[in-house]
Amino acid sequence: MSQDYYELLGVGRQASPDDLKKAFRKLAMQHHPDRNRDNKDAEKKFKEINHAYDILKDPEKRAAYDRYGPAAFEGGAGPNGPGGPFQGQGFDFGSVFGDVFEEMFGAGRGRGNRGDQRGQDLRFNLEITLEQAYGGTEATVRVPSSVTCESCRGSGAEAGSKPQQCPTCHGRGRLRVQQGFFTIERPCHACHGAGQVIDKPCRTCAGQGRVRREKTLKVNIPAGVEDGTRIRLSGEGEAGQRGGPAGDLYVFLSVRRHQLFEREGADIHCRVPISMVQATLGSNIEVPTLDGKMARVNIPAGAQGGHQFRLRGKGMPIMRSTQHGDMYIEINVETPTNLTAKQKELLKEFENAGKTSPTSEGFFSKVKEMFGG
Image (cartoon, rainbow, N blue to C red; front, side, top):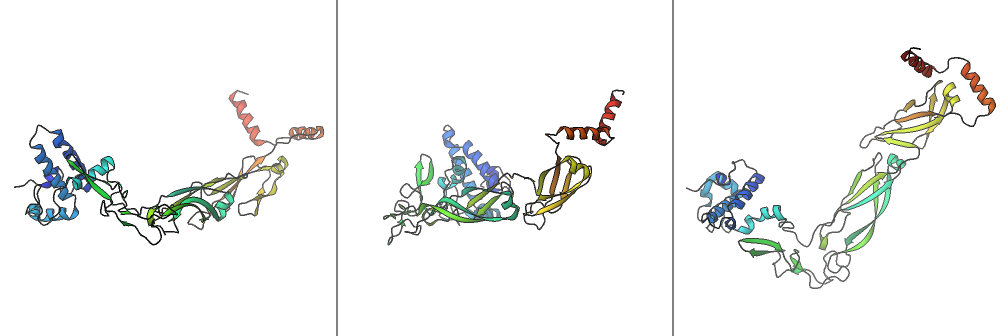
């Protein structure tokens, strides 16, 4: 009676494909004949492990095994047999180790890749103003890129001809190479993995199917974007090789620092200087907003420096929403400079007239209390 394949790999019946791969990889390295030259049973054990993994890694074979057990593969589908219900899919070190070599050495990269490879994605850095971020805008960008060759329409072949199947790999794009105990797949050296060869390459693109050119594109920037926002333009990256799909263009936005406003999320902050007289007696001032208009702010008498006034809905638009942030006006009370002798005399009279600075008076009274008067 043959051993259960799950037990052979040391996993449960609910094991995931990743669990199977890890278990197989560990056992294959442990029982590899090159590591067990003095153990005659190592090669037999090695083949049994390979066969078990070859069955369980394939969803159809695994389903058949789970339902019928080894009977699903009777007729010689074992490690030394030709087939059974899955005839023609017998033991093959190349296919068995394909996944492992892909994980370990990257040998499987490009497996199945043809000449029509997808183009690379591109990145473009775009700086915008805070006003543009507020209202949204359409920007024009010029991007150096690879575009589809117009002469051959991306095929890479001269007009009147077309790519032919590679005679070396018969269109597979890969060759199997025997290296000692293993059979490893490699990209075909004749067609470089394309599966096709071009007898008469296009003179414009030298058979690449694409040429270097600068593209001019329109980028729609929505209102409310933030610094670091990424906008994806599908299919506007580099053209694919030999007619392959184009990559994408990613536009990364940076918002230029504003000379008046500071942004904090969806809110806008602005520091506005006012005179000592305006702060003392109160005043109405007008401040600019990002929508290009002026907003009136009422400064009450006795306002202190650093006090903030909130203008609801005057901040940045919130993306994917109809709401706006707020705008905060912070007053900065300026101290008079370059005073005349008369002005200084008036200020001294003002200071001696009575208690007009409650905050400072309260502070110094507490200092007196700390030090016992």
